[in-house]
Length: 72
Image (tube, rainbow, N blue to C red; front, side):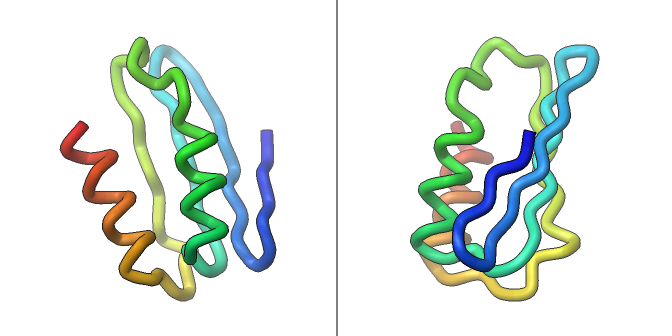
C-alpha cells in the first residue's frame, strides 16, 4: 500500500507482526497527517519500523510526530 501527499510518500509493508513504513520526500504538516493515518491500528503489532533513509526534508512537526510515535 502506498500513500502519497504532495512531495511525500509512504510505502507500507507488513510481515510477521512487523509493519515497515519507508518515508521519502518531505515530511511536513501534510506528510504528518498521512503518517499518523498509516500507523492507525499499530498497537497490535509486535514491532513497527520507520525508515527515514529517503527523506529529503523534515519540518519540526514531522520530527515531533516521529518522537511521539517512538514514545507511544
